[in-house]
Image (cartoon, rainbow, N blue to C red; front, side, top):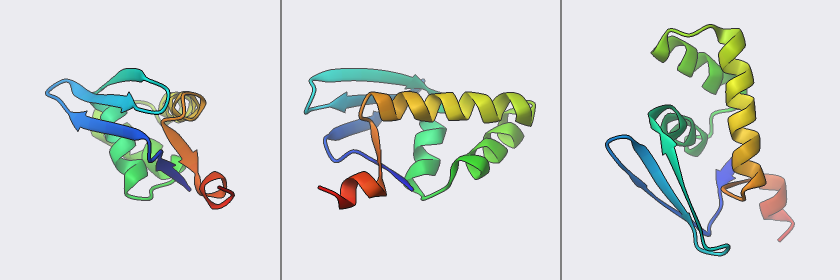
Length: 91
């Protein structure tokens, strides 16, 4: 399971969400779809369920959405926005 890093602060905007990584001093913005993915991650949803939700909500092909959601979550992980519970447990 993935959780938002405890060093990341976020705020909802009209266009999506702004994320501040206070540990690394970096700021990120995500659009409404990215914000929804982060919201679903915070609710404990797993990648396949998130892809299903996004596909239905935006009327997009599930095959395309699965790849996009996976790539987005990988980017979040790479930039230390989210961490797996395994990483948190090992700290």
